[in-house]
Each structure stands twice: as structure tokens, then as C-alpha cells.
Length: 309
Image: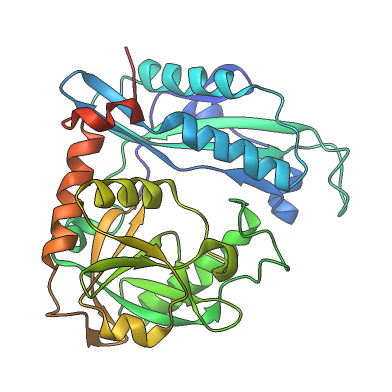
């Protein structure tokens, strides 16, 4: 999806013109992928634009940085305030996608990242539905990727690290070139892990199942946890357990969750229809509840919103 430039990007405490938000070609993270990031969305609500679960995202950014032994030179509160200010400065009243990035800058080269300066940027821009309006409405086609998800003892899958997403990009390209919308990666031991940038849920016997993050290599998703809470509040049982690929084929319903993708039904896996091949009733109910939540229409979840005033 093409980028729509906005006026300013926040870089190390300053608002920089979009076109001037550049780095040196010898920036360390460009060469070795040692950096961490987040994806966050803001939505238009009846009380103005609001960022969804902003503090949770920034806290996860810090947790990822800790795993990579990167000391962020700001506090959580400072980056929360910078994000809100950025959305306000750019006048993104209809909502936007937000990308905080912590990276290692210019000045050192080699595999030892410790001496490198730590830099922080936050960008925000209007961004539509990641997997398309058709996917949100009618579901996406998926395939099991030939690429495996990282082993957690090879790279830290609990962290949202920049270089680790080469794995996801390879799986995504394979799926798209094969005529599918999205890929599903298996863990090192062959169990279902996650999609290229989303967690996965299935409906079996009327309850929701999603893979363990601790042993599948899947990232613990903030949207995943939000949907879990909404589902339980609606009376559904949600369990984290090991899942194999045939569970996907046998599922009554399936959907994926992520900040960029939001909540998207899965209509097929490996050319096998999931259920009827159309979004199921539980998926549609959760999808509607999620969109109502992020738009500030459900009072019980309003604590998840940081308003930009």
C-alpha cells in the first residue's frame, strides 16, 4: 500500500519535515537489523481522534528494546506524549497508522552494536485496510508457508525486532506470488505459529483457540489480547493451546488479528474452505465489536483509548 506523506515526523525530540526525515547510509540498523518497532492505529471517534492502546504499545516497545539490550533514551510517558503530539501536529483527525522505531544510528560498524547511538523516530500517516476492504468483508485466502517461524532460541520472537521480519517478508511474497492473500507460518517443531504480521484464531466446538506464544514463536499481540477480552466478555471461552495445520482445515471459523490488519476472517487455508468459506457468526460478532471498540462506541473499553485533544 503506498504511503501518503504527512507534514511532520518526530525524530529524537524534534518535528522534522517528512522529506527531511532521513538517515545516513551507514546507519547500523540498516546493515544488521538490530532495532525494534511498533505498529499503532488511531481512529476517529465521537469525541475526536483517539489512539488505541497507545501506552500498551509503547510499553511493548520498551520490552522489545530490553530484549535487544537497547536503552531507549526516553521514558514511556515521553513517547506517549510525542505520539499524541505528532497526530495532532499532522491534523490526522480521521485516524492514522503510527510507526515508532528505535534504531541504532551512524557512528559504529561491525556486529557489536553496543557503542552505537540509539535513535528514536515516530511517523504517522493515513493508512487504509491492510488486507483490503474485500478481505475484511469476505475473508482472505491463506497458505501454509514453506518458511518456518523463527525458533525462539535462535532469535527472540517475544520481541518486535526489525531484522526478524525478513522471515515474514519471505513468507508474504511466497503467498502473494502463489495467488493467496496471506501466509501462515509453522513453528520450528511444525505447529501453527502465526501469520506474517498477525495472530491467528480458530473456532472449534464453539470456543476460540489461538496458539501459545511461548512455544510457537508467535508474538503476543495487543490486538490478540483485546479480542480475547472482548470474546470472554461476550461469553466465549478462549484457550491458548498447541495447534497443528489440520486444525485449521477442520475449524468451523478462523480469523486473524493485528494492529494493521485489525480483525479479518480467513476464508480458506491451502485451498480448503474454512467452514462454509464465508465469515462465520462468531468472527463477524467479534469483528463488529472490535471496530465499535476502537471507535469509542463501547463504554467498557474506553480506557483503551488515548484521545488527541
